[in-house]
Length: 91
Image (tube, rainbow, N blue to C red; front, side, top):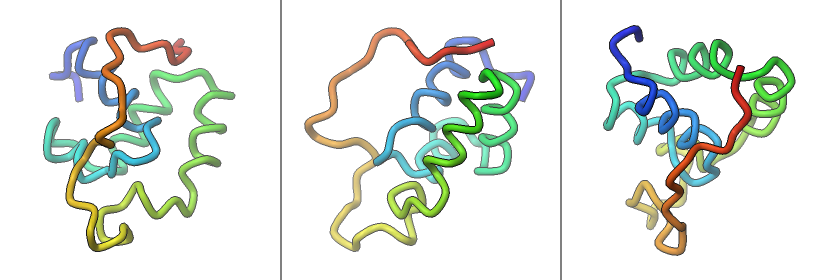
């Protein structure tokens, strides 16, 4: 994952925190799978932020495309705003 730029890492972290963005979308856009996203989050987040994120993601159906409702085929909510800066606390 050393090939990722700081901007790409920020976007992956942002997507990982979004409730409706599945891990498959991250894989599609950046070529990294769920275990790599978890490792990236562990490396680039504060310990408490990482624990909070893991607790939040555990069992969340919307983070896995196969567990989502059949009618949902998009990666992003139509009402979601575009965020210009990552405001998630990092190391």
